[in-house]
Image 1 (cartoon, rainbow, N blue to C red):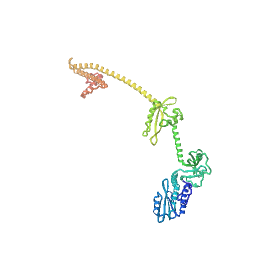
Image 2: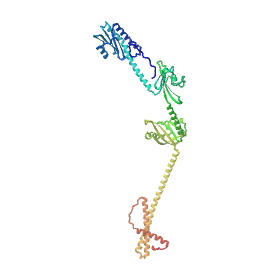
Image 3: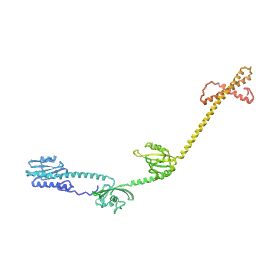
Image 4: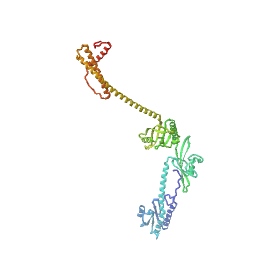
Length: 522
């Protein structure tokens, strides 16, 4: 973050910056008293507080085993050790039952009476103050780390971010994305950000709106850069002091130029789509999974005789007769991501309570997780088709009835025919058998001899009678075929006899025309 840093505060005894005046004075007071004592007693001292980097000494640095032990372990109890170089004493600095430092004194001669007790009392009195430095520095370090984390977060933002003084409108802080020059000159936001010489109007200034409402504000404005239109979305948030007064305002800017272009393109596309949909004669609608209509075209409104406002936001189910609703609901429930399209036909109520038929093609719409979000449907009126289908159905029923009646008549006629054939065949067979029998008797000469011509005529009578008898048998077989009772009889056939029989029949016909009674007539 870009800001003005304070100058470090320096002290003669402390190597690290101490921001707290009370802690600094407490530490310096201990040092001054130690210095005063050692000066009066011609003694040297060595003070170590590692965690706050406080290291001070006066005179020659003590040497020996005690010094090493002090530096490595920090004594828990006071110890006085005599060496060839004099006397040494080490005092732990304790705060909250923790050793945070050591004060070491050294004398060339034996310490004065009560000197060690005085130093010990002095250490106890001032340990709390020096220990507070440790706590303060730990807290300060945590704050610095937290501030550094927040600073890194703000610096990583791709959006320009500013902290603005709510009273004089100067920008006091900005992140790298803001790319502001001469920030330290404390210029107002309208000059640095908007390149203006005067304050923004209250209608477009989010800072003024935040001061007025004491709430976060989001607004948009358009400006031109190098002749190109730019759109920016501004987010502004208030910062309050302990008395609830707004002292600063945080603003960040989001370039929404491309989004605005996309919105305009989408709006044009929707307008074209809506124009196409509105011009359709088919009924077009969209609705939620519960049946609530979200869009209907003009044809839909005209068909039901209602305004769009009376349809959108309400369920279309009441337009369907109750006996058809369950079928319609099952149809919609059957659509899924694998089979999203289906067609259904059902009845509807239109203006005036008239019932008409419709056919709908429904497409189920799903989100990226496969969850149903709605339906888009195209419908048309099929009432006339249904009427024609009903008429055809009724005609088919009537035709079927007529066919059944005609079939019954034919069956009765066929039965009569069969009965007639059976009766007529019986009537034919009796005289034919008599004719054949008498012809046979005449040929045998029972009634006297016959000449050649008579014999020939009698044979022709016999053959014709047999042919007629065969014809009667064939009629009976035909009746059996129709009744499904025919039995196949396999008999040998002499082609010469068939030809001779046919010839005889033809000769008889010829004789009738020529008046010749002999088969030898030509």
